[in-house]
Length: 444
Image (cartoon, rainbow, N blue to C red):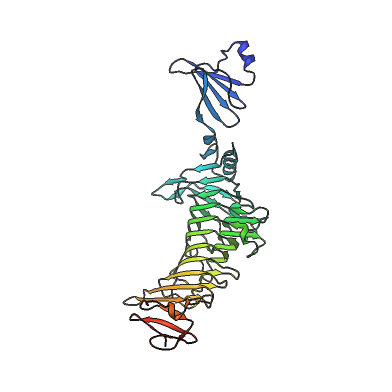
């Protein structure tokens, strides 16, 4: 119960404080709670608490001196979405974000527990966004218990297609200027057979979007009508001129899946991005005739998997004109039917390693990219293994002179600028290709 046990004179001295008191049922002691706009000052009495309303810190009294007991601001910046105070709706999630974000200069965290009703039944009490997009502010993390434990359901409103700033059409929207935010351990379902998107990023020269993270999430589809996107990145302007306005984000351990014939038709569409990390990204059952990973990726790191057994006319990865500087690991698990392809590189200047398990046609490499194609044909007995390396058209050998050739390593090749075409090599010529064969340089 509340008690006003201080004399009137003490009340006047403490006019800056709001005072509450209660009696402990265990000991019968009275504890006086004070609130101050800043750090508490002056002496204090036993059984007193003081909360600094400026940052949430709570202080206890020790030997007549205020001593920090617990920093409640860190708790204030972590909000648990419980389904009661914060209902499992778009409004509940938005309120949780607002309550967690921006207090005392700390990042806000919204924690969402398991929404599963039961492991055996595999049923979910999902957070129902309906057609409401959740805008993610800077310095805010939304953290679930796992992509198969914490579910979010989004039904895009009518008229949606590729998301735009005026109509994001997405479950989560990272507007221009978003930084240091993240979505972790969630499973998102694009529902209702509508044209929807899981994550939409925008950025521009004034408000670049960077240092965000999406990790350990799934983006799924259960319908064969409509067209869905997983992650869309759109800078202003689009293409290589705006790519730097969406940079240094990490997208990791993301699974794009579906059933009833199709998964997410367009798992990743980049209209321009720079130096982002797409790590362990998997597309299962993409639509036939589509391109799972497509766009203007510049100086990115991409680890991608595309899997579909009954595939036709799918190109796993398309790198648009202007794309360059990418390091790509592509696991291309399509079948070998004509029309399928692992790669279409229209950019150049990329290093691409393709692991190809079903003798899928490589596709169209760029003459100025380095491509390693590792193929295992599982349809043959024994398995057929092939390794091909496509060197860029401007590949150059190291150059030296005859006097500096040194001792060769078997299989080595080097351009000798003053060698003659003899075996072994000799000087005084106009140049020849020197090859190391059985510890001898041979120039013919």
